[in-house]
Length: 449
Ligand SMILES: Cc1ncc(COP(=O)(O)O)c(C=O)c1O
Image (cartoon, rainbow, N blue to C red; front, side, top):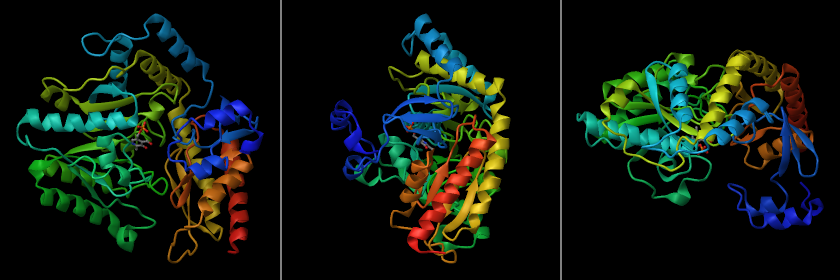
């Protein structure tokens, strides 16, 4: 955005807002777009330019698009009926009802939920559940450690950031919270240590087992993993990975936490991504699409066995399970069910990925991958060595699309698309055409043919 042309009140207000993860140089050069409205798939900025949102916004939360009256009305009605009731001895009925709805949808034995205001808080709760479970069960009362993975993102609060690796948020907080370990993740394009893709699954699972043994199984509470990782764009794991991870966790009584903050509530074409591999986690964290971005909410859902083991859950926050957010969530889920958007997300996602495959022929495209409504195109300056670009190429591709009116995201070595589930096939095709033009223009700019 050209900051010279924005109104003086907004220009001045900008000096008072601290942008997360945007450098001051980028702010001053007008990089962040400031939006004023949205409708369906479209967002409009304060200069009246409209964009097709192929990201569900850059946090991927706005999974059902903008100005959904059904959800907005549910929030309004709840605020007028009972806007708040407290959290522990008093609680709103809508909060309890949402727990029951999640129990109905969640895989297997995941039946009991507590809430927070974000994905980070969902993971904080998941870690507390894991630790409190081991304390109360008694077999491993000192099990506190959490194992996560290289390139993971689990949030920005201190516990969640302890498990996080990417986005440049980790190092500034270190030494951080003790008791976190990280192991390699099963990336299949740029594999750990450059190994053959066929070796990645067993290597990563063996590494998990060795890490548990090395730390001492009696000290390890849980392993946390995103079913599909966002690091360097939509990393879909090998088919057997979670089955083998589940077996290792069971062997050492280490709880498996599925961080479904991005993938949960339909993003990958199933209600929850772990369903793709038939795996049941012990604890599941969700947020984002749980309300389609209409209100802040995160949930930590545990198996009945864990819930029954805890005589009490030692945790409390003023706004956990806020009625407006829970009403937004029930309406979001209701809207998905009424319009069969999980089926649509699977079908349209498959169409989208198929269309994107043609970009593989372009000289700077290394990989195209995804699951459901979450796809990415990964770039390289050399298809043999898979060397990533380090020179702003990815950002320029994102900006080229933006200039053509399509919002996509920069994700490390890749660009990412995570469209709202309501995206039509025509809109998805428009995104592919636009991205193709942007990549061709960038390859020309780089002199690579
Ligand atoms: C997988 C995952 N877990 C946790 C979080 C943290 O969620 P929040 O930003 O709502 O705190 C995110 C956010 O992007 C995420 O992608």
